[in-house]
Length: 562
Image 1 (cartoon, rainbow, N blue to C red):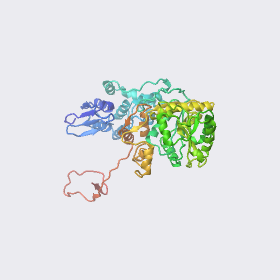
Image 2 (tube, rainbow, N blue to C red):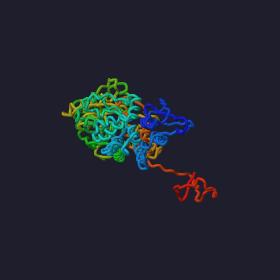
Image 3 (cartoon, rainbow, N blue to C red):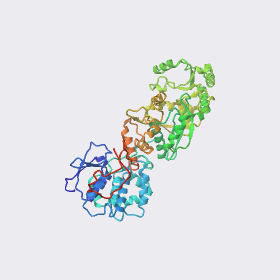
Image 4 (spheres, one colour):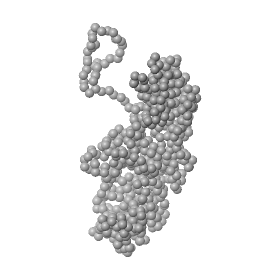
């Protein structure tokens, strides 16, 4: 290469630069090859020279190899126009990365190839090699070409170009291309959605799931803005519903007027639109306050609920110790009368709460007679002063899930202890409310990031104490906050779906999500150059007597330097 010793191509085997390796073989370029297992899995390839200079990235290295090639013109375009077209396709190829943007871009290329054998001209060029290399390295491509008829032309071109001896030899020499595989779905109909490529595994063996009948729900509480943990919950619920050709409902859990605001509701709806969520409709737990009160009356009549005026601290201690309340065996008539007092928030009613009679001796403390109803005089953001006594989430959720036809309620694994509580309360409600269907629960791992607070209570404290500018502060892990910081929604969705529905708790690093964001932005973002100080030369040259080196060049009225 130009009389110098051969440069060295360094890359990680987890991100093999197929296009560079194929081009080196195709152009008979003399380069050394070195793999480095210590590099990050998404590290770009580097071509390192003896003097320490290096070229980074597939596109840059491809252009260098073409310029130093001693082979006849053709691979890099036989004319300035063809060379420019090759450059354009090399740039386009860098956007062929796993994620939500891969399929639409692949469809556009497929349509372009409908009446063409090659991307540029009538013979193989580096444009073909660049695009082939990206697809060769992309796990998601195999799944897409099998499932999407619109990619037929791209698939035909891919097979044809891949049969070129130099390209085929590279693929063969590197061994099996598909190093990482996704477990085969137990249900063949779920194959296209169960995971693979950039999507984590969703082959979770969902119990009682029937194709076309699965209904999930996303139940945000309007007490703050959506953060990335909520985004994962929403996307998983939608993805599971789509897998089974079902639907997802959105229901606002507005049972605590002390914390809820219409502002939060509107921001959550806006964030759901930003996330591109598809849902069958929006409902509110407050839509069912009358039915919930009637259900409570029926459960009181059956002896399933009792009114308790035990002080809060004492009740907490009794629950921890497994000591039944002295009011546990209260007569039904007394509890019935007190509940009516609670509904109007009389002085007597405000001293009481309504508790579900479950199992005070259970090791699982969530089963130790949880509270079902309590008084709250704060005006409700939606119903105003109409109600003064509200159901708790633990009591309302099973009933409303069932009455809305939810078949599968997905929760993070931190609520695993409350799963038994959910089923026990639902069973009692079904006993007094004939026809109330069963709901199956499924838990998945909560999303956690290192050095990141996702507690809504703590985030609210930051906002209320002026530590941050608001819920959309770029330092906040809310959907609006990270968007202000520059995160694309496509990157967020790709990252979330990449987590799959695993139950294993892990702490994520922000580097991963920002790397995905960079891959989406780099091919399309404009570049600008600026200087900090305005020193300029409006006259020249510096040496009026020197004419050597003069030539035609683009000129501007002023030269800005730094």
